[in-house]
Length: 421
Image 1 (cartoon, rainbow, N blue to C red):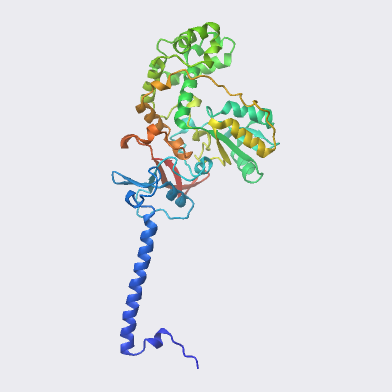
Image 2: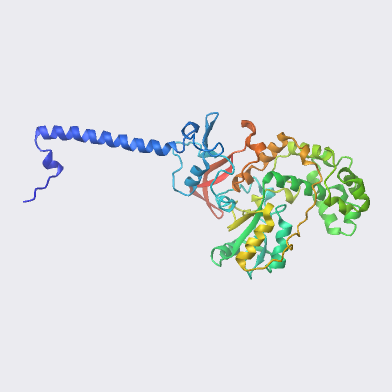
């Protein structure tokens, strides 16, 4: 007969009961030690600097004045639901470095949240999105000024049968998620883009747009100028001593080139001696990033979210604007489109008018702080000058818990989003 050796059988009798209690206590203690050891090893992967000597300086977790800077890979595991959000974090925020996530710019964007109230002045087309659409190739391009947008519009029109149209939210979601359209755009390093954005905006809002040869046959441009020039009036020093386009060109264009043709100034290096750069630096000191005086100065991410909610567009892929030609060739190959050699050099390649070499490191760090949302949401690594900033000037990102949004409604449950710190 097979005997049933259950615990009640083994532990019958006073001595047996005592022995079982001793054995049980030992087993529980041993299991606690093992579990604790495993938990310690797992948690040490994401602990402060002293536990992560093997990681690179940029990737490892560090302590900064008692605050923990979390590893980007750890943050991504929380975003993916593979690890829980730390329950002992009462502030509901985790700090990490820009560019440290093992995600593409498009993937990082999908975790981004932009406050549509705070950045309302930067979000265009709040109920619709202006885009170039190719039904032939199921391709949608979202324009971002000063991020290879001229080349992109040219490519969409000439090679992909694209045309500009205003797209509603539901139409875009349907096209991407059910009709297999790809939504793409191009992005670039926020610091370098800010230089180009200011340079373009400075020209567009100059007093020469109110009268003179540039607008003599452009009444719509002239009208736009008078409707928007109030935006730069809070920075009166920008155009001091530059009442006309002629005065402006003499500051940055070599005399020999200027005597040939004003357009020749666009193809040669600027000769400005710091006069324009000084005005630029003064503007950066005064600028808070909330009210750009021209659309070219808007954040890149403000063009990639819906204005009503701040939720990201369903972007399929974001390409590097500094390698725009390669990006369009890759897109063409994927769509079976042939682009002849040399046919993508359509963008406005104008020499920057102010001398960037005259810009101080302090100004560059201020720009990085102004562009922090772009650096965080697009997962761009900071330039060296901003990575080595002092603690009070440093740029960090935050993994935040905010009330979950469904359309215009706010849910009681938390949602994990990327924002600037």
